[in-house]
Image 1 (cartoon, helix red, strand yellow):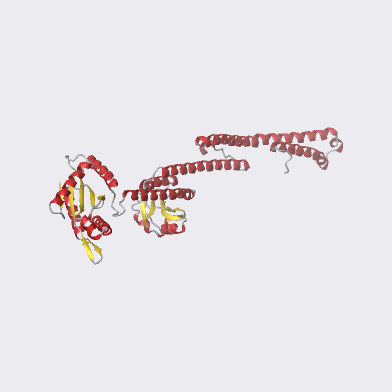
Image 2: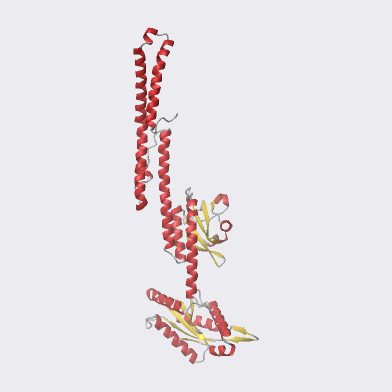
Length: 450
């Protein structure tokens, strides 16, 4: 019906009054058709009565509509006003707790347009609440990423947040390092190593597209949950920075993901890509700052800092700690005879030979010039002697080509182990250094323990 004014209920009142008057005008002729006497029908009194009755019916209909519909619309308007006020306050306070679906929802007690309006309002409140949850999740995720520069800590913190925000039961973050895909962090997976070989993950990374898979349909099986039940749904999201693949996110659930979990993950993976790129750059810078560029061993500054950490750990845990110092015998003669470039190649070859024979967890440090330091956590005197002999033999078996000749080199080594008489890292190095000088004074190409 056409609008008469800018107020719906005023329009309704006008139409109701017009309808009532129309009924009042039509009613007398209708009575004539029914055979009532004309002298009683066609009179001003009868016409006045029917018109009055029509107006009363119209007014009654308007009052009922105002009472039934207007009251519900007023409730809807008041609720919207309350939500608007709370939204205006929460924009600055970030406290959305006063307007959640439980406290702001309207009762849906009719199956008509009014009920549909209340249901739409409730859906709007639910969507608004979810948008706040997503906004809070993204803000919290950004806080996690911005507070961590170490790659391992970043991966662990990011995975915890992703599991919490998406409702996943298990997951992993993989990162590309030296052209291989390695697990950076994992949770509730029996093993994350096999994920690197998954065609699903590599395809998602290649296409830079997220994949949402149902295990039975995709043929992908991950025995993912700690309790042993297999995953039902899996989300795979590539992690990129400026279109360069950096890794992948794998999330699994034994039930089903929420409808918008994939959309949320799509938003979060962009921030994670930037954070991982920064962490990798930070990791490379730290490595450059800690590594001797000639031999690829750690430099003296890093080595001494690491020795301090290992010394404190050995005291707390009451575990042994060994150090081994060695240097090249007659290295000056090599430089004088073949030149410094040949001497550099000899140093690199010695460092490579040493890395081949030391244990995983031992730390090789270029202490200065042709002198090296090896930190040996958990090593007693017998271990130090064995590792020192392995290094001595490996170096003695190493030759460096120089034209038609081959340069042979040996090392002298001195070792010491933490004990009660050694109360500082400096004292441990002094003891090893004294043993080294004894090895040189007693014939070289040997290992002496303090």
